[in-house]
Image (tube, rainbow, N blue to C red; front, side, top):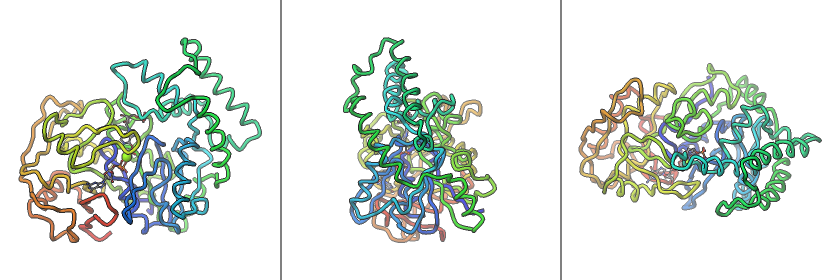
Length: 422
Ligand code: GDP
Ligand code: IMO
Ligand code: MG
């Protein structure tokens, strides 16, 4: 039992990157298992901000092996940009980063398709990050996708052309000229040239059967941390379908996206903000449209790390919190961004209980709790937290029957309070 998993249990951007970075020194290997550059995981230390999209958040610790698992989809351009940023801070990720040969490639055409499909949906668009995630997973499931392993084969150029032509023919058929498509800051032909260059650089990394590496590590009792992307409520099966991403962001995704048995999983950390946010479209039962949402947005700096879009804000949704806990078997909660609530005299949590539709907001009710109105961002010890905040934490623990093991009081690595020894 030596794999622990960190999962976002809302609509993403809960602060997974920060928590993985903090936990990493306790592990030998840190892995991403699903999603791709739709993710933006922020890590702040020494006054500098780093945003990772594809590379696991253990990469800042040079003695830890980082693995991009088979369930991830990779755009070589984003990948190489991230690598260059890491090199600029004197890291050498070539030494401690392995890529699964079964991870799928996001092709330039996938980004175009993402854009076209979203446009065709009109008012019902998902609000995708337009990074090509959906079309890449579609090709994977349709059994015509290209893995990173394929890029090492002699016939890769032919495979690339075949898949590209397949999609260009579809676009032609729909009357869309690939060269005419206007996507802000994106020209297909320019991107393709960059993409091919980046792929050549990416091929210099260790591309390997990562399942084998992980099985060996498990046998040697090494400790592995799996880092989720997005959040449970964006899961393709359990989220607010169709306003979801195209992968399993929940616990099952860790097994299929790494090739590890469920019996190897020990702790499952559920990362949640002390309130709720969502970027993109779709149901959000506890969403607010008033001064409070503006205040949460401002104090929480709720702007998407990948797209820069403002995030929608609302109170913490207890019913959805429980739903996500049950789906994932969460063993520990991590409560993020409590400092954002510091100024409120009253805070609220939402409850609604339609067992047939967890996202139904018809019977929503708000429970009022007293605020603490004290700056928590510089507190060093759990015991020094304001009493009303401790009561809030107790309330959540009782409601969910899950311990809250860490409380985050600011964006930096050191702004974390451990309630129990980790
Ligand atoms: P992830 O995708 O789950 O890794 O989360 P993101 O990085 O997209 O979004 C989390 C945002 O909240 C980032 O801007 C973090 O720097 C910031 N953040 C993380 N923890 C805290 C916290 O406890 N308080 C505040 N104020 N900001 C935080
Ligand atoms: P991290 O890992 C927040 C949202 C998009 C959109 C929907 C589908 O940083 O928490 P996609 O690009 O996957 O087709 O978009 O999912 N979304 C995220 N929202 N955080 C993310 O990742 C997200 N990744 C995708 O906004 O609503
Ligand atoms: Mg994010």
